[in-house]
Length: 449
Image (cartoon, rainbow, N blue to C red; front, side, top):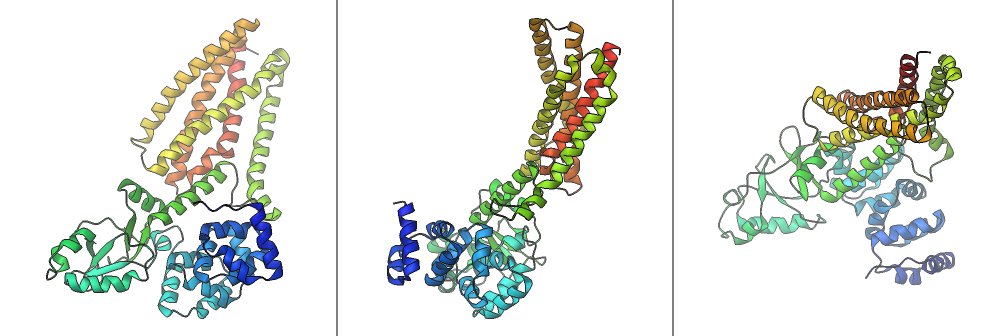
């Protein structure tokens, strides 16, 4: 049954914390899932949340800390001593522990690592901290179950029981040689049905998907999605098994990347949250607002250069927002499709083929919208030459905007820049400027001013 976190419960817990009634607090939270504990911590003040973290068993609070938003977790960790943080890390898988400790300052990292009792756990965390957080090495956990190819089935079962004690979930059993090089995987069914005197090399499956420690997270996600994997082994440059990445870690990674791309597409240059400081939020938003400002000023000066046209045909002024809006919308549509294709690695064909396809699509859309503009002019009694001018301008603007929206993210991707930037103010602003310039230039050619 789903646990309900009501306002009455939160008030009750706050009262118990204030009274320091530890016995009743533990009774209320004894069977509560760690995800619900995280939600409760979010609803409490910093002092109250810290009190609960120190009171509850580290096995439960360590998992709850991983469920918290980064900003909330950082504030709680700031109130804990190095020894208290180390106690939480002792209960975590190495990948989660590395993620937590990477959020600390270098000095605190050293102090926390020094407080870790399990030296092997500490060494594994330090190893993971060496890798880029968005690489397979940064995403992997060291906990796994592996057997050697020359072991007997009977000896393998005994060894697996010991290893499984340190693994939260056993998704796969990996087979290695005496040099720890990955050889394949072992099916639990084949292991259970194999004769007890058989060797692992007689029953294991040599085909196994794997990634290296330097494989990018996006590629890991693509492979796991393509082959429907719950876990994937990670090897070093020598082919030695060093860890594994599980589906829950990849889901978290995909979610974080999606949030980053969404913010970037919205014109936010840093990964920020609503509760961040005004300075950080301003730093994240202001650069793109400045870009939009200069883009708007550029549009103003373009219109100023065609001041004579506006005096002779003032109706053109009222269609300027329409042209700018259509240019921005078409550019965002085109770039969004390209960025999605790049992210999913399903873009096919050359750049030239892609541009030809976009031009064809733009012609169809532009002609359809141009016809609607001309029909609108007939209905309201507008000068047909003006209607044709607007329709021709709209067609040209849509083609150019589609080309820019297609071309820019592909080029950015080839240069190693996140193409998600092309779905936001960058494309909108540039297409606004191009759109207004084309509108007045075509108007000048058709209307002859």
